[in-house]
Image (spheres, rainbow, N blue to C red):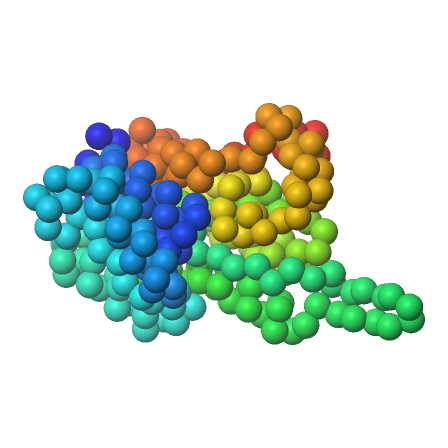
Length: 263
């Protein structure tokens, strides 16, 4: 198994890509703790996790557990990391996947009326997507430094290179790439690899709400002519979190069906 007995913290495990990562890590033998603000989503993930893990789940106490936590609050993150170290004696892997969107044009003028992306829309996205990633990485790194081993993998986005109506989201994900590269330099001497993944269009709850005509236009721009399945994104997270990727650090891997080729 790719991640046998590795201890992993996965943020944003209550739906979409995060849920797929939880399920993939369990299949690969990891001991998983996942956090989210969505308690109902967490419960659904744990239900699916039980179906995936089968008998192994009941035989391996603590193989998967979910916890409601706010990744933008230092005390919440510290509590979760401390509980993992107390339970398992270590923390091998951090997956920074939690994220939100608050889409709007930065400045919009229609019929002489000016509308702006609000401060709340900007701040909320940067708070979760960028600060949350930085804060979880900072606190998890302290545990990893002590054990001289760790893997940090964050979910960025193809939007990091710019996307209409998402200046807040694009800035947050570009920041995730920058934080990834900086931490890779800072933590390399402790045998901690830090990478990120930039998914393109992926079939999730968020993308399910996209109108059909817009979806068709988006798919037309992807050379493989489809959106990714969440499990395809999760597979790359699993690889980068494993010892198979031991000489990869400071990288952003685009998993986008060729969407950004030539962009």
